[in-house]
Amino acid sequence: MMKNFRAIIFLSFSLLGCGYEPLINQNFINVNTISYEGSIPFLIRTELGNLEINASSNKNLILKNYQIKERKIYGGSSIRALQGELKGEMMISISNPSGIINKKLTVIRNFSVSELNPLAENQTIKSLEESIQKELIQQIIFEVRLIEM
Image (tube, rainbow, N blue to C red):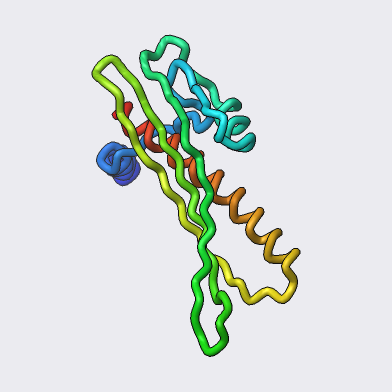
């Protein structure tokens, strides 16, 4: 009986001490409105549009200047590209009563260019662009939640 009591007390203190929290709703973002510039891709618009927003919040999120840049890295005995680099960039502005916070989000992905099939290389680039856009969505959610703290 006493061992069970001690085990329960130890377990409750360890849970309180390690910062245990119930799961937070992952489909929620604490902003009043989300505004998009014309350069923002459809995937980012739909994913952020699916999130629940808080109409009583005093924060506004503005997404702008989305760009994907491709760069080839040359080297070796033959003069051809060995690797490629895709860089996705986006500016976000979070406005609240205390001011406006501007952040530039960047995601970089590398890929091999030694493909003999250019269609396969194009498909690789498309899948990497989608991966970059999903990572930018996660960074946006992280930045907004970081400001809440």
